[in-house]
Length: 212
Ligand code: GAR
Image (cartoon, rainbow, N blue to C red; front, side):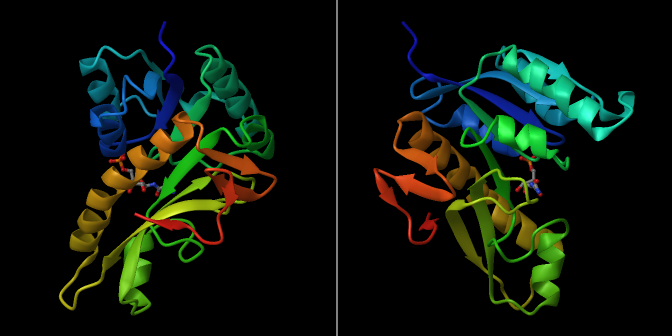
């Protein structure tokens, strides 16, 4: 019997984080991606999933009258795959409160900044403009506030003197590919959970995000 944790991954674009999740040793062992859903038909990540024989679905937000209608349809689609974890991997949508509540404690997101710094878009540019010396990525449980849920783990990178947005983004993305599979593996192994608004790892509340 397959006891690995069924995971649905939501994407909007390239899907390099999806690829990292599929390539990690824990895939097919601790967890397995049972479906990949995109809000965009041209998301390259859909091809990555198909190459691995993983079912894909496109649910185009432009086909829906409002955010609530879209999120309700998305919930129905996701739940049809009976996942125990929903993983947002570059899914560029603002989520409705009803959607986030439905998956509370069972939905993760990766964000390209050291949260709570730089919520929202263009994080690399904003980190450079702010004169930061350090930047990175965070994995968090999804809560109602955009990029505001409890942070589980972070990967830090230095900002170098001659960095531009592209070089910095590439440095962060490489670390995202280590960070996300590690956290998903913890969840799949039953080591990680959300208790109220506190993150617990191995039964202990985290005082601060784990550095990876
Ligand atoms: C990643 O950098 C991820 O952190 C970011 O989108 C990129 C997706 O790349 N997510 C967000 O900005 C969410 N607010 P990928 O499609 O190659 O995984």
